[in-house]
Amino acid sequence: MPAGLHLSRTAKVVSRAFDDALAAAGGSLPTWLILLALRSRPGTSQREVAAGVGIKGATATHHLNAMESAGLVRRHRDEGNRRVQVAELTPAGVDLFDRLRETAIAFDRRLRSGLTDADAAELRRILGVMAANVGAVECDGAPGGTRRSGSARGAGPR
Image (cartoon, rainbow, N blue to C red; front, side, top):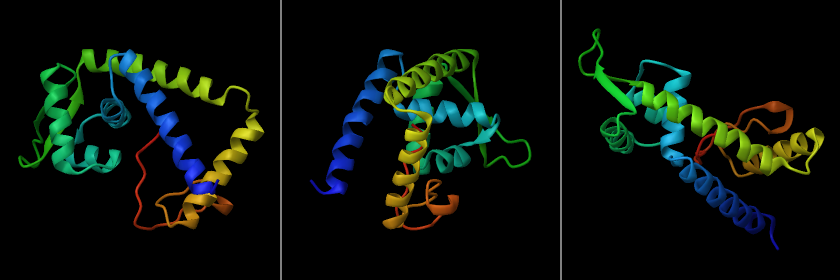
C-alpha cells in the first residue's frame, strides 16, 4: 500500500477515535482547540483564535457564538480598539478545558501505548519529513528541526 494511503487511513482512524474521546468528555475537536488557544493566551482576540486554530474568522465566530451561549466563553470589545472582540474563558470554560485536557492526555497515552520514547521521537521525525516533502506548513519533525512553508495547513495539536 502506498505510504500516503496508509497514512491517510491511519489518520482517519486516529482522528475518529480522538473525536469520540472528546465527545464522551462533553467536547469536540473545535471546542478543544479554541479552549486550548484561550487558556494558552488569555484575552485573545477572535482573529487570533482563528489564526491559532487554523480556521477562518467566520468559522471561529460560529464556534465562539455557540460556546458563549453554552456559558464557556465571554466576549467583549477591546478597550484600545472597539472593532476587536476579545474572548476569555468563563469558570465553566476552564472546567471543560481541564476535563478535555485530561481526556487528551489519556488519549495520547493510549495512542503511544507500546511505543518507546525513541519510537515516538522517530515517528515524529518521519511524519515531519513526510509533511515537509509535500510542502506542509510548520513541520517540526523535518530534518534538523527546521520549519518549512507551503500551501497546506495543519489541523492543530492532537
